[in-house]
Structure formats: structure tokens, C-alpha cells
Length: 117
Length: 366
Image (cartoon, rainbow over the protein chains, first blue to last red):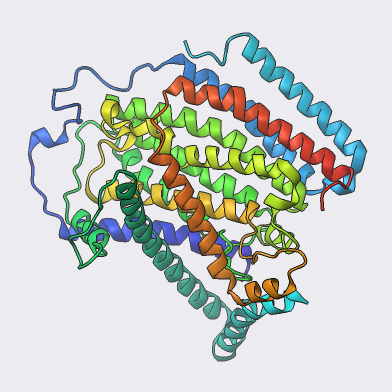
């Protein structure tokens, strides 16, 4: 069996699991209509305004920082598998890359991007 | 020498024999289809059984830590049937359709959460030749697959159109993406040590000693950092601020009811198991038995224990550790959580990775 077949099998299993359980629940569970039921749950108090509004900009900063460092991890993985073969030259080159990124983190830290305001 | 006995428990000859036998009576496409069906059913069974076991274990462990008994009424002594009864109950609960939600995304979110957890679940190495998916880029694939779950959580919170779920989702999103970094870098440390990304390759490379013993103090610290960030990735323990009951009811899945809610609950427990399973694979030798250098008799006895027992034993040990942490520490605040990751864990794991790279390049590891 190829890797692709197995991957597809696992993915289909997940989808079948959700679909089948939902089908069983639809068959077993009672259904009744009540306009109050469709309201969002907010401690029983009717909700005011819409909830798709603005949120704290701190989350946005972390998301941007995450992008930088996640891509970094992706670049480091191929090197990590061959550390021994690329030797000292590889280590020096990758240290340069990592030091630049650490400088980036230090800059963000210094600028206060990591402080929750 | 020792390897020959471990091969005895390998399932590879069996699967190859079954494949050849099936190809004898039908075309190869049908054989592959039939095998896929069997594998799918096996994944489903293992997934469901483990969920029941983990939920029961969590409730008993939680009871013990809080000086009470835990479930003990349903199903005779020890409340063994409590969780199956709960599953039946949740199946018979109405699935409520929200009025103002984004229905497509709302229905899609449980699929994504379960998809992420089943995909990474099928990468676990149960025994020699018993992993469903064994890619060359194994651990990288696990990291990639498990981040689909973050998308599901964000969608669940956003599409419900409720303030609690929206706050829970952005909190959870910020926390999960942050802790993914130190998690990924700890995995990198092990990849450097083992020299391969394949999960079976990492386990094989620990035949002469588990990574936690092989990498001097570095892998030991990396193991601790992995456990902390893995705990955060599983949305548990002191990091469950996404569903802080006192302030957000249930966080991102407040608006889900019945079986819809069940999927998030299921995925949470299986993610706990997957985190522990990957920790076992990376640091505690996967299905490799414990060997002590010099004690040949002891090592031979350890080899008699099948790999799957070793794997499950170590994994449940790590699961117990994580439950212990969950029921011992108070919940953190969002700024404390993000500080811990960005100012402590991430620089620390980067340092660990660099030290490990230097050690490996100079040939200072065993």
C-alpha cells in the first residue's frame, strides 16, 4: 500500500466517523422547535449587537510573530535531518540564520510587542 | 543479537502475507480496497476505545486528586460503564441549530478537529511495523496535521456568533499557535539527534538507549519543554483558559450541543493521548524496551515484553503525568501564558536546539 492510499484512508475514516455519529444522533435525538433555542448562550441574557466585532489587537501581533517563526521551523527541518553530513559549514550557516531570527525576536521584545497591553 | 527478538513481534511479515494472500484471490485494487477498509475500522475502534479509557481514567485520577471516589455507580464496582453510558446519552441529545450562526463553518468545524486528531493518531508507532502511516517526514507531518485542529477551533468559535465563543477562539488560537513553536523546536532537537524525520526511524535509532538518556541533559530539558507545550497544545491543564469555565462557560464550543459537542470532547482526549504518544516516540524510545548497559539478563527479560505493551505503558505514564499537572496547577492568565512561551520556552528551546546541533556536529552524543 502506498503512503497516499493510507493517508486517504485515515482522512476518510475521520470524515466517516463524524458523519456516521451525526447521522446516528439525528436518528436518535428528539427535535423540537422553539425560537428561544436558536439564541446564542450568554448567561441567559438576550445578546446585544453582533459578536463578529473587533477583538484585542494583541492577538494580531502574536499571529504575525508566529508566522515568522513557524516558517523558520519549516526551513530548519531539512537541515536537522542531515546535521552530521553537512558538518561544521552547515552548522555555521544555520547559526547565522538562527541568530538573525533571534535578533528579530529581540527587536520585537524591545519594541514591546511581547507585552500584553 | 537483541534486535532479532524484537523482530519476532513485528507485524510486517504478517501484513505482507495477508496482502499476498488477498492478491492471490482477487485483483490488487480490490485487495488494497479491502485492506483500507480493515485499517479504517481498526483506526475507528482504537480511537473510540482509547477515548472511553482516557475519559474514565481522567475522572478516576481527578477524583483521587480531589480526595473523592469518582464514578462508582454505573456498571458495578468502579463505575466501569459510566463513560459508555455517557456516550449513549450524548447521542440521544438534540443538536440545536443556531439562528444567527454561519451554518457552513459551524458544521465544518467538528470535521476539521476530528480530521486533525485522526491523521496524527494514525502516525503513532504502536509496534514494529504497526504504524498506519509511516512517512519519511513523519514527525513533520504530525505537526502539520495537528495544526489543522487550530483551524477547527477558530472556526468553531467564530462561526457560532456568540461573544463567549469568539473570545475563547481568539485566546485559544493565540495560545495554540504560540506553543506550536517551542513544540516544533523540541521536535527539531530530537530530529537532529536521530538524524531522521521518519517516526519508525526515530524509534529504531533509540535501540541502543532512549533519547532522553542519550542526549545528555539537553534532551531531558527538551522533554520537559515538550510536555509543557504539548499540554498547552492539547488545551488542557493550567492552559485551559480557552474554556475557562468561570468566565467563558465552555469557551469555543459553548454553542455546540449533543454529539457536536462530543466531537470536541473526543478530540481533546485523543490529543492528550497523541501528545503523550509522540513524547514517548521522541524521548522515551517508542516501543523499544528498557535496556541497562551491562545487565544482559535483565535486557533479555525486557525483550520478551511485546513492543505494544512498552508503547502503551510509557504513553499512559506520560498521560498520567499530564493529568497530574492538570489537577494540581491553577489556570494561567492569557498574558502569563504568552509570556511563558515567548520569553522563556521559545528562547530556551532555540538554545537547546543549537547546543544539540553543536554536540551532534562534534560527535559528542552516543
